[in-house]
Image (cartoon, rainbow, N blue to C red; front, top):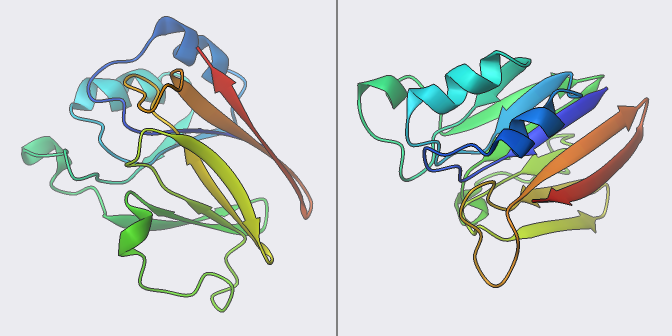
Length: 150
């Protein structure tokens, strides 16, 4: 299973991002979407599971959860926009992957049995990074993650 992960689009989606996500079986958006058109464009590609970021306001975002649990190929994924707001122990909850955004900086770190992924910002990177998304490949319990820059 291939999962496309993006965050912090802030109302903008580069056509290269959309093209790259075409290989994804599922798309996870870790918040700061800023407008429903972003989700509409992603939904044309694959199943989209979004969460609300701190910049997602208005009626369109009212029903977006602040956190989400996703079962992907028998691996539990936990999504939260700002990792500093996490109030659970992922390892104790049998979570294999934690996805966050907010910083606009890509990162991936393995802490024990839990993989932490921040895709960076697909539209407005910070800290000298390029715009990026993450692709997670799951094959049984083997999980690989790579960032793709634009």
